[in-house]
Amino acid sequence: MNWSPLWISLSVAIPATMITFFLGIFIAKKVISANAPVSKLLDVIFTLPLVLPPTVVGFLLLILFGKNGLIGRFLYSVGIQIVFTRLAAIIAAIVVSFPLMYRSAKAAFEQQDGNLIQAGRTLGLTKIQIFWRIEMPLAAPGILSGTILTFARALGEFGATLMIAGNIPKITQTMPMAIYMNIQRGETKIASVWVLLMIMLSFFMILFLNFINIKKEEKGIHNITS
Amino acid sequence: MERFARKAIIFILLMMIIMLPTSLTGCEKEDNNKKEILIGAAASLNTIMEEVKLLYQEQYPDITVNFTFAGSGSLEQQIRQGAPVDLFISAAMKQMDNLIMDGYILADTMVELLENQIVLIVPTKSKFGISSFEDIIKAQVIAVGDPDIVPAGKYAFEIFASMDILDEVNTKANYANDVTEVLAWVSSGNADAGVVYSTDAALSKEVTQIAYAPEGSHNRIVYPAAVVKDAKEETARAFLEFLTTEKVQKIFTEYGFKTLP
Image (cartoon, rainbow over all chains, first blue to last red; front, side):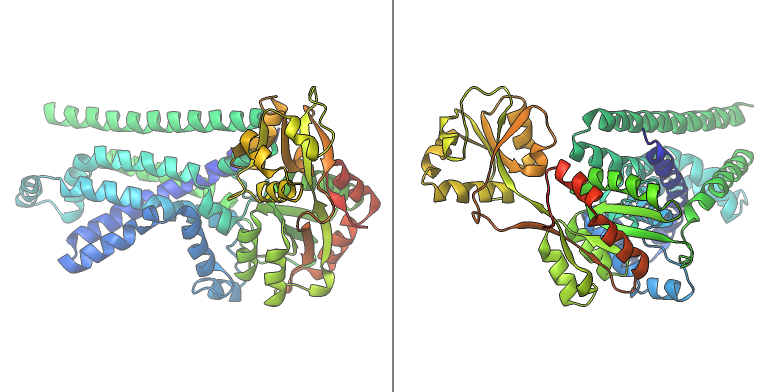
């Protein structure tokens, strides 16, 4: 049995999740601090990939990164081709999972008690210190759930990836594509193996992320009580 | 908290450093001396093409052949947007014609590589004695694709109409969402007869193909293949040539396709 979809999926979903993690938090903070009409417009734009069908997202990305695309034409002129590579799969995964991370982070930051942040200011903490020591720990549960959603979405990505990265066995064929192809051929046993693997992977990722969160909470409590 | 954050960031950066290089392979434009081609083929051809690829690699071990399998519509769009496809094998003439019309294909390379046919199938253990399309009224349950959404279903109904048995068939017909469902019903014995493509019939040992649709009863289902413009022309032409050789044509017929004359 060809196990390459496993490796391909992981090497797409993990980097995509990490990049989306930082991107989502960063942009959420920027949107919150922007002025009213601008922030509302940005909010719509950043949530859009969630609303559009993945194939449509993939098609738009294809136009963007294709030979005549806004970004594509520059890349081709310097000899870089993104379409039908694993990087394209990562980009697709980032774009579709971004709204999930963005919205989770934004909601987590918006719900915070402003008094705590003010308290930090009066204690003389810098902006960065306030962010890492007050805002992030408070936002942790929301950001954690955002990360889980992001990873799950990136791992299960199919439509957009198919459009911009293609379904090339051993190169860009991810687990969802392997499942689809095997069901098409009637190889339901092989498809079931992949389905089980995906469930297990998601299960362990969620366990792992929850574990990190618990460790953080324990440390936090320790710091207060010591 | 800061110490943890620092550790977390270092861990994440390490993971990215590990993962990213493997993800970036394929970023540079292909070296035209390293013989490698990418064939955009209809999703339904994936098993056949994997077998053809093995045969090809035996003869030409230093040429790398990769396939991307997708719907013909998606492949058409990808080729239009400059995706690096060298050879296009479509499941229908429509997408090929579109691309030829707009100048994306080397029209002189096009061949009608495969042809699929509509066939009547029954469970191998069937006792109804169905030996032709007209006999289908002997069945109690007839599996057929929903004529509104499944092309094979539409063709089936056209055939029945031409035989004047449409009303009778309708009283016994079960509509399926796709041919895979029709095949599943017939092979499990839940339906006594069904109408599918000859390639579907070849997939299951539990069904027997009884008859082909009458000559001229539906539009030909042709799978054309052609070389894409501005692609690795020489290697693509050679591969297309390979697809027309006897050994490969035999594989195609094994899978239920009708091949080049």
